[in-house]
Length: 390
Image (cartoon, rainbow, N blue to C red; front, top):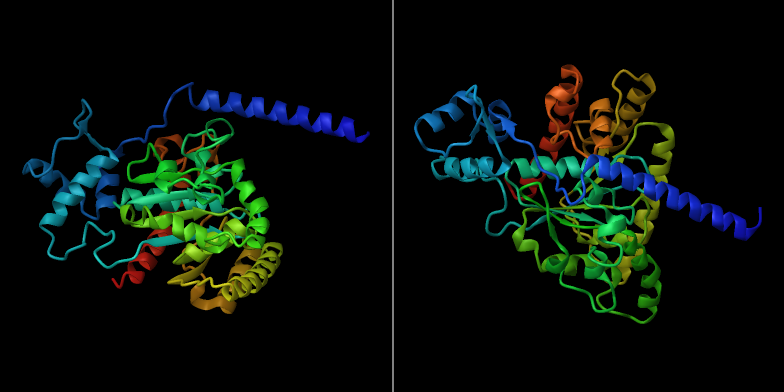
């Protein structure tokens, strides 16, 4: 098969796949439809607020909080906005300031977290979006930044990057070298109260292509400082900024690293992935040495390895996890992200486990996956709080 025939075949396959994906999106989301976040039961709401269900009922009985959606059978259901309002009410009478409103206080710096690994399939996007969702459910103001040209994070927020942001509107427009836009012009509101999105898309690949020439021409700020400089405009609006990084150690990833206060390296516990991570760490150290000589400064509050897609009953995986804990000790997170059909099945409809109803899954499967997610995200939240001195 000659070059022309190969190129024709590739283009045909690309069109076929694009049409199939478009059809799938139309099935999941009708034309012009917007994603909507479900309501939460009283038990879920109480857990997220950190109070008992009986105390939540008493707040309603005493008229201290507004009415919420109630079923004909008398069951209350809460939106994320309802949770935010109740949290503010609880904070007014809390003995310890910050007991319910746990975000930034005056003097606290915004926490910028990067989820990364240069091996695809390590669960970066899944981890990043579940962390963003749980933090927002707990009242944090979150900005999700998708710097992966594949834009999976953007897709999970209900957008079609190959259509909605084909020519403009991505984070690339805020960090490009030629007449960049203010980040506030790029940020999109999302269906998930408490989370804004700086979308990703194929245009981001231009940053990788343009940076070598920008270095030759000494364009300022340099690539490693552009992300931090861009975030500075909006950082007062958020408690936490989360980067979903591409599966490569390029200029985009390095720029996110230099803007980060915390790094979470996702790793699937098998020896091939561990060997790949070894190369990743060595390359990262070498490249960071180079950019530090050019003036970059990396200032992290924490770096953690997040064990992903873990199967506790898998003997070889147990051995790999023990091996990693022996090597890196406290830098390996205590909580692990379990491999679960509930998480992967939710992903088929571009949802996270926090978006779907428990009734859609086998109860034990759902609860096991949710417990795993909550433990991971609670540990990440504790790292954020510790960085703020709390």
